[in-house]
Structure formats: structure tokens, C-alpha cells
Image 1 (tube, rainbow, N blue to C red):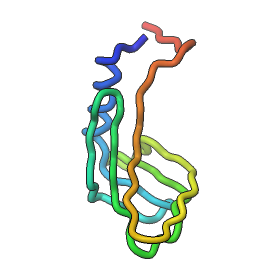
Image 2 (image 1 turned 180 degrees about the vertical axis):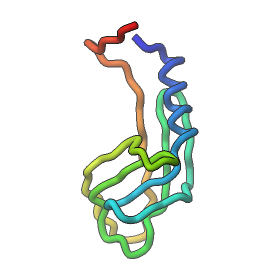
Image 3 (image 1 turned 135 degrees about the vertical axis):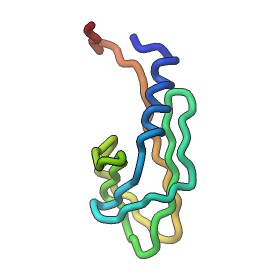
Image 4 (image 1 turned 90 degrees about the vertical axis):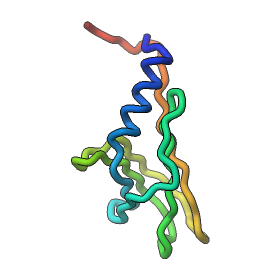
Length: 99
């Protein structure tokens, strides 16, 4: 089992490599309102650009363009909006680790 200490280090590692968020596979965001690792959770907050009516896909990328996280979603946007995106690291039963 990965300890809470190990899980918190995963969150910090992700924080250190996040470069951008891509919305709907075309809108790139590099300015974040918040980027923090706390405990086993990495939190990213960003403003939705004006003119975007909905979000149907969110990707978090590293500096080389590798996807750290990606999700299909449906978020209708009626007015100015800020999104909080969390990546939580947890232990699951029946996960096998080998050495």
C-alpha cells in the first residue's frame, strides 16, 4: 500500500510538471488562478475564456504535451466561470505492486 506520504508526493510531482489545460481539444490555457498540491490532491483552478458556451473535454498536459489527465464531460457555461479541477491520489484495494 502506498502511504499518505507517498500519495502527497505524487500530488506535488504532478504540480511540478503541469504546463497547460486544453478545453474541447482546441482552447489552450496556461494562466491558472491556482495550482496547488495539498495532501494527496492536486488542485488546478482556471477561468473559462469568453465565448466558450460549453466544455465537453478537459486535458491537463505537461511541458512535452503528454496528457496527465483527460476527461470527457459536459459543463454548460452561461456567464464568466472559473473551474476547479482536482486530481486525487488514493489507495485502492486489490492494487498490486511489484518489486
